[in-house]
Amino acid sequence: MDSFRAELMLLRRRAATWVLLAIAILMGIFFSYVLPYTVYRGGSTTSSNFATGLSPLLPDRLVSTLLGGFPFYFGMLTLILGALAFGSEYGWGTLKTTLMQRSGRTRLLLAKLAALGVMLVVFVAAIFVVGAASSVAIGLGEGAALHAPSLGDLARGLASGWLILAVWALFGALLAILSRGTALAIGVGILYGLVIEGVVAGFGESIRLLRDVSQVFLRTNAYSLIAPLQTGSGSAAAGGPGAFSGPYLDASHALLVILAYLLVFGGLSALLLARRDVT
Amino acid sequence: MTRPAAGTERLRSMTEPTTMERQGAAGLTAVLDGHERPDAADLVIETRGLSKRYGGGIVAVDDLTLQVRRGEVYGFLGPNGAGKTTTLRMLVGLVRPTAGSARVLGQPAGSTEGLARVGAMIENPAFYPFLTGRGNLDVMARHAGVSLERVEVVLAQVGLSGRADDRFSHYSMGMKQRLGLAAALLKDPDVLILDEPTSGLDPEGIAEMRDLMRELGRGHRTVLLSSHIMGEVEQICDRIGIIRQGRLVAQGTLDELRGRPELRVRGTPIARARSLVEALPYVEGLQARDGTLVLATDPGRAAEINRRLVLGGVEVLELTPVHATLEEVYFELAHAGHAGHAGHAEHVAGAVSHG
Image (cartoon, rainbow over all chains, first blue to last red; front, side, top):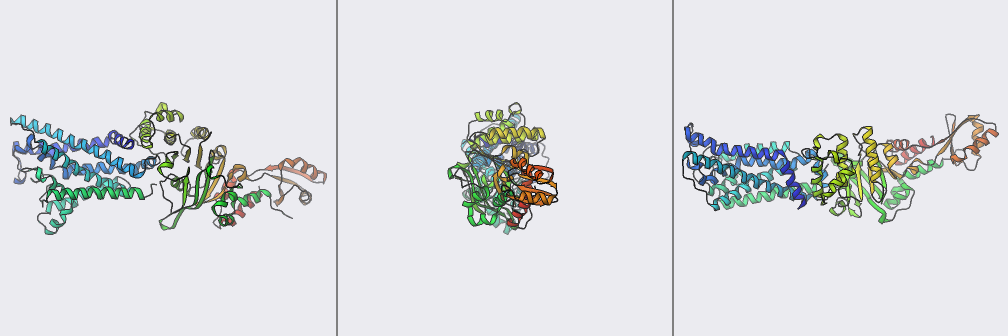
């Protein structure tokens, strides 16, 4: 418990954590509300794919609208957070200093992951709070009726969002442990998340080979996990950032795949941390 | 007749590896150290055949058998790349040995139980740059499972209380070293392992750190200090081990390593001087070099030897007690050639006997 508190303190005191959260919030507001609202108000789009109405921007569609960003840009940001949380320990040499106390490698990993998990709760909550404020502001501005999303949807949305961020953060952590640093981990992670996952997500519906392999890819499963909570066109379905053309999988299958990824990423991280020398 | 000097024999016996290998770990202390194997309860750090090999055939530590006793300040000397830091890393569990074993306070090295009573600073002190000194110690105290009150105690102990709220990234090298030492002291450890703690410090900082280490080494605490600063080791350490190419080549107290003092004699005629001193029963060894005689004998007999030489018709030009410095011993042992231990021991013996 003490190690967990120490790790949480580190994440709290680190400016990069809050910078990433600020970026996440800004991106969330921009892509989920500002950009679609601008399009709605001005109709200034040449793409029929990105046409949007007012309803996705109102509070009752909060969960649906916000969740579209989790498999993509929110995920990329938490990949960076995970890579920084673990990779910096190598860069600064603090892993050595910490391990010379008596925490033990597995205990340290669990403490770090637990702290990261708590910080992701803060991320998800902050994104939803700011998203809710944005949707209320738009609703008030447009004189629309304001209805809160159902508590069930909200809870499932928060949980799904956290799970998606957790798997990306853990992927970042694994890459950091693997490369014993941050730079390569973030570079490879973003390259994978944007290019590999992007190609699969973008063409998965139209190319048979990609359609088959996409069933094990993170973004496909993440979008499939949130699909039951999405109604109408979110930014993903509408051709915005992180556009996803499918295929959509069964949500329970997606949940199992994501949980399996969590286990694999966590297990590999523990194995590498336990077996390798710290120099 | 030239008899080998007693000091030479002493050093030869301390460094004779073939005997070490024959006798194995149990005999190592006796051979290297000139003492009987200490009681197991007195051994705070003990390695047996400890080895670390990396890929590409790199041998960092090779069959190292080391024993550090309770309450002593043990100096671990060796040139860069000799395997000191790797050994220390293995003692705290950062690096896993490829062969052999290491125990600290009776526990396997790096185990949670063992680390609970061990404080260490390996290489440069590494902390979170965005935290203050106090913040860093708070984090380490939580990981160590000690009360946060210890943070203030160790800050005061290393003289960093006044700058504890500065960020680590703003610290000078000396302050960083102090913070590293403070972190090592958080657990009020029974064993303190310090790897070149004065590295990068200015002379004033070195002196302060040396005083601090001397203070820390008092009482029951055992200190294993890695260094290649002779003065530091000479002034602080009770016993010294010298490592070369991953192997322990000598171990003992400062006096044991330096060997017995000898007498250097210059006089004319040198042949007459030589025949006179050779006849003296208390001269245990004699070597001649460049017109100088080096006698293996008690320097307290200098006056008596002088009288004999003068009465024997020798004009005595110089009669000087000679004692090998730790630096001389170190250079001979740590930087000897690669011809193997036996040849190396001969080399050292010769060098020391020549004063």
